[in-house]
Image (cartoon, rainbow, N blue to C red; front, side, top):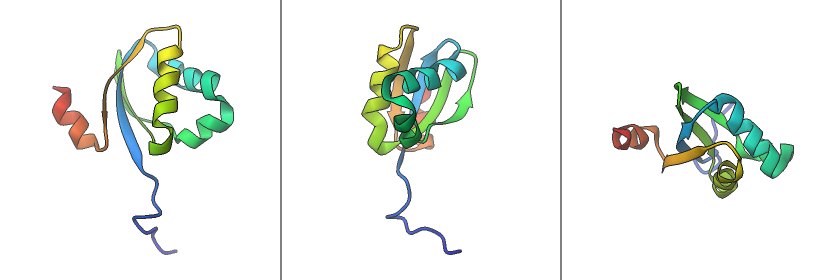
Amino acid sequence: MKPLKPSMRERKRYFLVSGKNLKENIPKAIKDFIGVFGMSKTSLSFIKSDKDSAVISVNRESLNHVRASLCVWPEKMSIKMVSGTLKGLKTNKN
């Protein structure tokens, strides 16, 4: 099988999110706000997760939907930073 062309690959954005119980709250917030079909479009994946912060990746087209769903969720979650690369996120995190 041939690899995908760069123009056909999925574009991702990386979020640095802080809050409590993020592994459970982030998927719940997205599913509650945009539904199951919308959540499948986001291509949500956890890159790194600590006690009170997490780095997640989402599809570029669903960036605003994910932001809105995290802001609307009753438990406190805040987006510290958004980046197009993991390297950019790590250098500005410190």
